[in-house]
Length: 150
Image 1 (tube, rainbow, N blue to C red):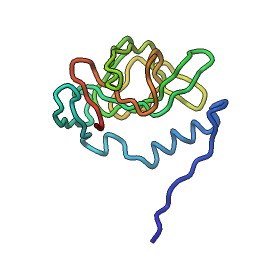
Image 2 (cartoon, rainbow, N blue to C red):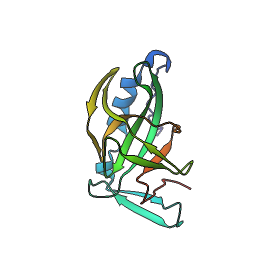
Image 3 (cartoon, helix red, strand yellow):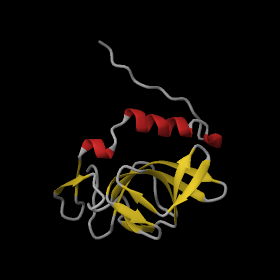
């Protein structure tokens, strides 16, 4: 029996289809809270690490989209898999091994932004202030690095 696969249409020009993409991620992909654990590795030690989707775990997230907002600049859409961060948090980008600072956190509703003070496990938010970030970039807090794949 063939599998059904969702197909979404959109354009990065004028953010057409962004809300449908976020809705599809929420509807079709498992929430970190439903997955219970996320497996990855510590890039410094090379050891396997397991994180549960709890606020008391060290923070880790994955950026899945970058947009250019006319009022904010670069806005990175990310899903938090564990932990909590707040405004002015510094995160480790393991791709470049550099620290990046979050200046603003937004809950996105289509092309409207609601400022937030923190991001918790399971949240999908827009993060401003990340300079050297690309799509599929994992983030963690600097003293406890985490990378989702080698």
